[in-house]
Image (cartoon, rainbow, N blue to C red; front, side, top):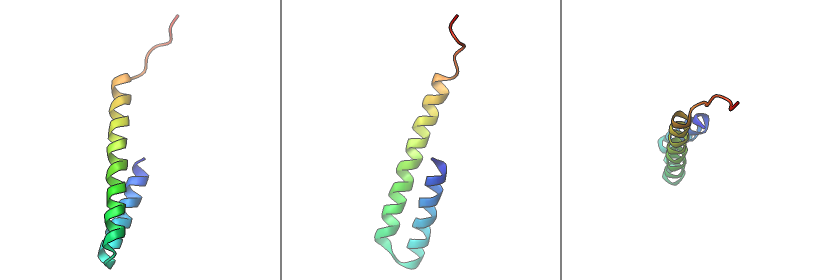
Amino acid sequence: MLSYTLTFLIIAILAGALGFSGVAGTAAWIAHVCFVLFLVLFLVSLISGRRPPAM
């Protein structure tokens, strides 16, 4: 998930530097969504944790 975020962030930076504002905005929005999704899933996994097997 973080690799997608970094990929879209790099695309957004390069597109912004080259003047493609529409592509840069879209890539930045996708990177933001991926990062928020990663944070939510990470927090859920921390809260749920590993439970010992039932006997």
